[in-house]
Length: 254
Image (spheres, rainbow, N blue to C red):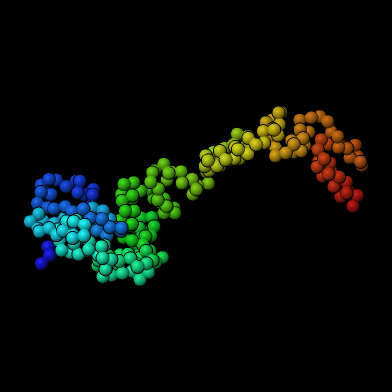
């Protein structure tokens, strides 16, 4: 009768004391997938150790002389040489030593994500991926936005994000007086002014998108009134002011 075999990941193996390991035999195991479940931290892993009692007999592979400490492990290993896996994926042909490992593999061929994070609602195909993801939340002591439930790794990131839910615009352009919620938005905006530096009014520092706009604006700083009304003696600095004035004459004549 085969004895019960357990597995430990590399990290837990390093943290075990000599008192815990002196009566155990640790045999290196690996898999293309995270097929082993650590007996210490319950995390699936693909490379670690098979753990058996030291009193157990050893079983050597006749093909490559690798030593295993259970018949089951040797049998599972032998499939790699013969490719006679008892369970095979019909989608990709990959072989597995147990029905359980085949079941773990099958979600790779599906778009379904049954494992959902209850903190940030991310979804995963495999439980091991969800477990790994949850460690991130534990390490980061996550910061959740109360408005939209988004998760942030740092408090400062959450504070920056909260501006989206506010009407405040603390970042103000000192050229055109536009204001922005985010500093990065102001920085992007300032690039526009850099491109337009050649159309700056030397009198009041206002910026204009073209030379024509700047020229029209300069009339405000001059006493010259080149636009004269053809009906009355009124004169204007800007053409649009004359146009508005002319409408008044039309209304009077009517």
